[in-house]
Amino acid sequence: MAVKTPSQTLPDTYFDLVKKFPLIRIRDDNHLDTAQEMIDRLLKEDLDKGAQEYLDALTDLVEIYEEEHVAIPDASEADVLRELMRANGLSQTRLAKAVGISQSTISAVLNGRRSLTRDQVIELSQFFHVSPAAFLSA
Image 1 (cartoon, one colour):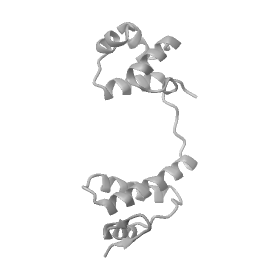
Image 2 (cartoon, one colour; image 1 turned 60 degrees about the vertical axis):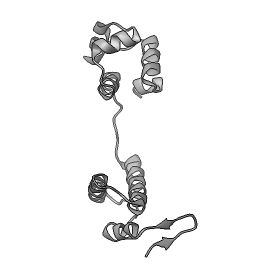
Image 3 (cartoon, one colour; image 1 turned 180 degrees about the vertical axis):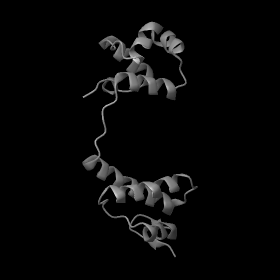
Image 4 (tube, one colour; image 1 turned 30 degrees about the horizontal axis):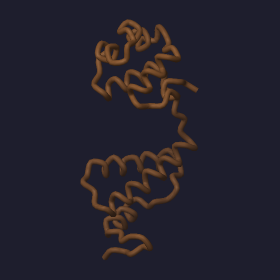
């Protein structure tokens, strides 16, 4: 039996999942680990509307806990560039040709031997469609 809310009807799967792992504030790291296990399990499944709503709510609870309790270090510009290249399937040579930055400069940045210039940050951020702030550590 589906339950009617003001804007939608939630399938029983939502409530079945709430019974297995209630949607309450994450209390500690052990609770976080259990929540993450549930999220990982759900991400492997083909979810109906109820399960997707549950996953969205649980993900929000995890995010709130992590923002308050889990320090995430800033990524270096080399790490950001490396990940953007990986995600876009780009080699150093292909990126160099695409943005007009020498391959040796890209290599030096990736190896931590040099930093990007302001103009290079702008060029790369425009190319990858990300904020220039993505390349700046706090």
